[in-house]
Amino acid sequence: MNAIVSLVHFCEADGPSVMFCTQAFHENAVEDIADCLSISSGRHSPVSDHIEGSKENIPFSNRKDPSNVSRSVPVSCASCSFSIPPLDTLGVVKIYNSTEIKGFRTNDDENPMVTYVGSRYPQHSQLYAAVRQACVRSLSCEFCQGREGPVLFGDDKNGYVLSYMFKIKDNQARGFQRWYSFIFLMTDRVYLVASWPFLVSKFRILATNLQTKANQMFERENAAREGRHDDAFMSRSGPLPPTSPDQFLRRRANQPLRSLVELLKTKDLFIQLHANFSWILKACGKRLQEKHVNDQKLFPNSCALSQKTIMFLDPINEFKMSRNSTFYQNGEFGTQIVHLKSLYDLLGISNFRKLILNFVRDNQLIIRSSDRDITKSVITVIKDLVPSNCCSVIEYENKYQPRTKCNILGLNATTQIPNEVDKLIICLLDILLIIIIVVVVVVVLFVNLFLTL
Image (cartoon, rainbow, N blue to C red; front, top):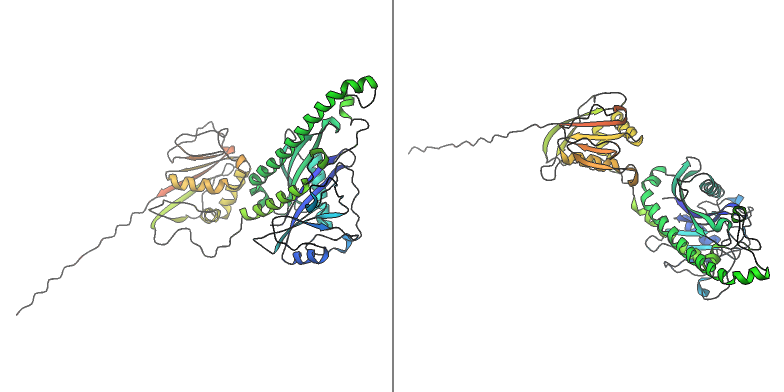
């Protein structure tokens, strides 16, 4: 899985800015990183190794890009700066700037051919442009209702992005809040959609942790400011609290922008982010894996035979299948559709496309059959095509349920669809069972042999 995870921030001075990103390198790219970077430690451990920066701008990419050598890193303000302390001096107050340390390198113990690299920017020019565009869009125009939360956008050229936007409190920021977003960028749109529940849950946990720390610091600073408020007002020294909406929207006077590390009082913040980003990349890559199966039959040949004819009703055009679909029934476990390829083989390409098209258009999908097991198996296969939050399922009912209650409905074969239901918003798949009973007659012949003496 090729993807990159980033933390981006809407800076009051610079606008949308990329703060930190982590990406995985595979096979020969690991050797390229080792050749280009000066690594002081060769340990293979979960702890990230610091990458010492040099005067040259060295690319973190699977293939070397000569144009990156001359490209200078944009100068950023303190609010969106990337700063980390050395691992062996975490107890020291001094914080090193990003010009001294370029980032982290984490080796995968389970797979030595994979290395996770964390830095301020991806050094490959095309990847940098894609991340930069995702940063601008996620912080300016692509956000969900209420602004905080996940949203998916992208295209084939620049990749597809899952952005999780959140805000944290800051007494020195405009409006007492700062906007951030975790973005997950990759080229495989189907994989990204399938990983939506996993990624959203992990980003929500990270955002909640940052917000909790920021809220604690916000309350402490408010309490300290209230103690000094009377003295500051009488002596006319120090900034006064905002007394109008216009003053509230502006940043406090004489208050410099501060980094996220200073705001949260967490010196190893980017170390923690890199560790979490690396784990997310690894775990997300292991969740879903493609498997190529050659000549695999739907059910074993030893199962009892039953023929089932499937008829399909399109909400726009009614049609019947040109051929009957035959499959097998297991007497012990019941009839089941084990994966999407099985359903594709049974319906055919034309009917399968219409089924999927109606489902993704948010038409109600109704599977009607007297076989409860096959109805549930079809629903199980189809519902995995969309995120779990976008799918409401009633597996088997004897009475029709409206689309407001579910968008996938399993019905008994005798259940009728009410006439008042709009046929343009439903997609009906009827499974009619025609059971062929095979009677095997075993004839036992007894032959009497008479021996005549």
